Amino acid sequence: MNKTKFRQFVEFLLKNNLVIVPQYNVEGYLHLAELKNPKDLYLGTELPLDSWKWYLIPPFQKMFDYKNDQFKEILPKVGKQIFLGVSILDLQALTLLNQVFEQDPYYQEIKKKTIVIGTSHVPKENFYKYFAKFEEDKLEHLQFDIFLAVQKNGYKIYSGSEDGQRLLDKFKYKNYQHIEYAGPIREEGLDQQMVSVMDGMQNFHEQKIWDDLGKRCMQCGKCTIACPVCFCFRMYDQSNLEKDSGYRSRCWDTCFYNEFTQVAGPAPAAPKHRLMNTTSQKIYFWYEHHFVRTPASFSLPGCVGCGRCTRTCPADIDIFQTQRDILKARQRKK
Ligand code: SF4
Ligand code: SF4
Image (tube, rainbow, N blue to C red; front, side, top):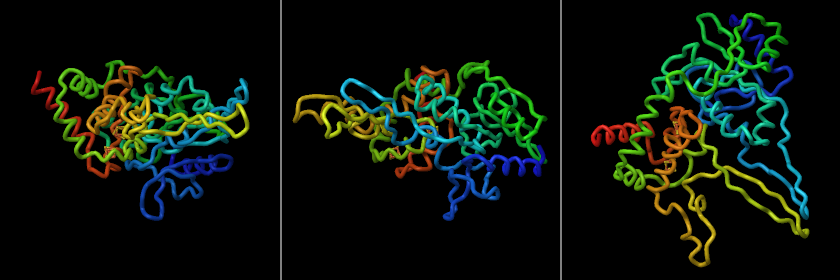
């Protein structure tokens, strides 16, 4: 698709849809927002600071109402939306979220109204060698509707779903290739860098790494908000003044907050009924979630190497430096 045709494609998308894209705001930050003017669309190697999860997993969501013993599910009311310009790292993040929320009706309700258009731009922040460059055979392990592979004078177009094909057909564009999703597991298995970090954390634990990080981390939780694959919730049950009625909701949570692992217990000792009490325990737990539990549960990297957590951390904690420290400890102790 040459550049002129691509401009027409963007205008076509804008006609009837909410199109979310990376674009610079007035302060010069690249972020995700609704596209009003095609000229504002940014397609390149820089990553927006916020991630696409904002549009798939609302930070606050009502789940159901109850009255007496009757429950009424409240599915999110969203219109059609198009994510345009999803980097290859963020496609990997969405592929993981699709698996995590495979049985979640709230996520699925939004997802079925969402078209994802990825690009082959490799972000500068990228940490993993696997994503160092785009190769066509990587596409079969990513979930998308349409993919734009950057070429000298435009894009080579791929479809990755029937929705993507329908959209291209509607635009009367035939020159695309279809890629069938082959599942998350690559032929060579899990990412080798990820496997080494996993092994380092599981078998060559070095407490000093976590104690040092624990002294620096302020438990602000910004890294979890910025991360495209952090997905933990806090559930609330709210009763109404009216007898035997109320609702349940969920909102984003972070494992750095004290209440995250608080469990019931007798007052006044209740505040101590937590599974994690020190900052080093919390930060270890966060890394363990990304580098051990997620790959073990979903056969996908629990970190896509986008560096958003590092960019937002007020304590300058660099996730890639921590990974290097884990690998060095592993090397020393092996
Ligand atoms: S680099 Fe940080 S923000 Fe990005 S996926 Fe990994 S843990 Fe999340
Ligand atoms: S952003 Fe940094 S300081 Fe804040 S919780 Fe995360 S690691 Fe700790």
